Structures are given as structure tokens and as C-alpha cells.
Image (cartoon, rainbow, N blue to C red; front, top):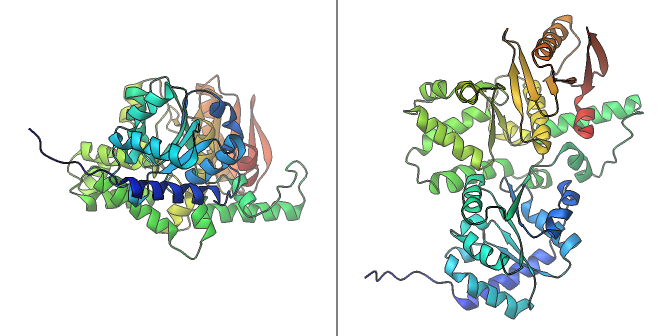
Length: 429
């Protein structure tokens, strides 16, 4: 017989915690309205559980407050499971939680659960009450855990939405800068937008880092993810190896990486260790690995990957670069904007080994990123790669080079290639 007594949360502590959380949530600064907010209207009014995932401190709690303010009025409960007072909360405590919420606030039909992955087995309670007609909107910072939990008991009952750091448009909104008419720009407006795009590359889009530039928000966030979300959660012995791998990736964003080479370079023992560590980093939203486009899944798996960071400001603050790397930051920003809109983003290699930075097969788009486009050598290199790729992928119909400032159009045979300044591309895409 197991005599182990599980720690139960004290009812009085639970009640006071929930009351304080709700009062704080109701008076929370709503900040910049997120672009995804309007798109969520249908999902909020539909029965499935709405799951919002994304990096720590990317604004998920603020988005919940925006959702509550715009769509739910006063008909919701709010619980933040990141609160240290709920550290011992277990799935068996959910009935007490529900009872306490009713006693404090009356009966309501929607639950807003923040950082729900901190409660193992949470999906059991959610499914039970969801089947009774309650609405759930939950957030979490671990993509893998949420996917596993949603896949076991909430299959077909959930909609997943990804929240990214601020887009360039949201960055401008944060700075209270009105976007001019991009079709009729003055020289001054073009110069200002170019300057703002460069600032965006440097500072990134993590809300707290922009609000409190004097604090080391990026460094604290980065350490929290490595130590709390990965090393502790997965009980890793080789934390140093994880740190070295993560730092290497952050310092080499927009570059090709090979698992075998990473294993040898960082002396991580085995390729499986590298794969596992990168999985942990991806699931915590620090990085994205982009596959080479090929019809063969096996070839995709063995080909080198391109690595991108969740935020260019984080890259600048924590990573290391020997030289000016604006071109790589531009490419990273382009990737993030593409990834906000599309799940299938690849890089492309022609049969002659020319590389195109991004290929979206469903949209038929081939996209290059080139900081400078003012020399014949650069133009020939970037255009040649696009033309070769276009000849191999007959369904491709959109050909773009994103530059720092040049706007132009080139014809290569039957192919029309547009060059677009980064600021314009980010605002129009």
C-alpha cells in the first residue's frame, strides 16, 4: 500500500490567489492590439478549445486580456498557473478550483488558463467541462507538451494559434507611429521607414524588452528558457552542452547547420543528443529549423537545416558575431514574417547548388534576401539563383528579392523579379 501523501493546495490560499489574479488581470494594461486578435473572433465563438502557444514573455497573457476585453466582457474566469502559489497544484485540484471560482465570481462559461502546461494532466479536466459546454482558452510555452496533451484527449476538440513577437507593423504601433501610404512615399518617409526597420532588426519585437530597454530582458528570458524550461524539465545532466549549442545557434542564425558537424564541433557525444537538444530548443520557441525543399522526406531529413531565431533583438543581445550581420538579421526577420502566415517554409537548392533563401510551394513564391543590391556581382548572383529555381519549379510564379532600400523590377526571359525594401515587404506581407 502506498502511504505517500500528496501535497494539496490550501483552499484559503487558493481563494486569495484567484481573487488577486483576477483583479490584476482586469486592470492589466492592454498594450498594443495584436494583429491576430481580429482573426481569433471565429475561434472564440466556436466550441473547440483555443490553444495559444508561443515564447515566454511574448505577450500571451496580454493577448488573453485583449480577448477578454473585446469578446468575453465579464463572462470568464482567469487563472495563471505560472504563479508560484500554485506550484503544488495537481489535476485533482481542478474541482476545488472550479468550486472556488464559482464562490468568488459566480457562474461563468469561459475559462482563461495561462501557462497551463505547468499542470500535468490538465487536459482531463478541460475535456470533461468542455463536453459540458464550457469554453476554454489556454496558453502555453512548450509546443511539444501541448501537442502531446492535445493529441491524447483533445483530438478534434482544439484549435492552435501561434503568437510571435511583434511584427514590424506592431512595432510601429507600439511606438505610436502612423504608417504612411506605402504607394506614395516621400524621400523623407522612405528614409524614416528604413531607419525604423533597422531599429526593429536591432531591438526585435519582445514587448517587455521594448518597454524596459534598461533591463536585461533578453538575457533573463534566455536563461529562464535554458534552465527552467529545458534543463530542469528534462532533467539534463549536460547543461553546459545545451548552453554551448544554443549559443552557437544564436550566433549563427540564417546559416546552414548539420547535426553531425554540431556533434563534432561541440563534442556532444552523439547525433541523437544534438537532435534532442534542438527539439527542446524548438519546443521552447527559441529557434526554428527550416528544411531544404525536396519531394523526398528522407532527403529533407538528412539535408542540412537553416536555423532562425525567434527574435532578432534576442539574437543581438545574447548571440555573438564577428562582424556586421545586418543581412542575416534581415533574412531572420523575413523568415519570421513568413512563418507568421505560413507553416510550410523551405529553403531551396538548385541542381547546380544555387541557393534561394525561401520557397513557399503552396503560394509558388521564391524569395531572396540581399542587404545590398547595388553591385553587378550581387545582382547577378541573386537573380541567377531565382531564375535557375524558377526553371526547376514551374509552378513558381512570384519572385522577390528583399533588400534594405532598393525598389525595382527586373526581367529575366519570361520571369519578372521584383526588388522590395525590407520595410515595405514587412508591412505589406
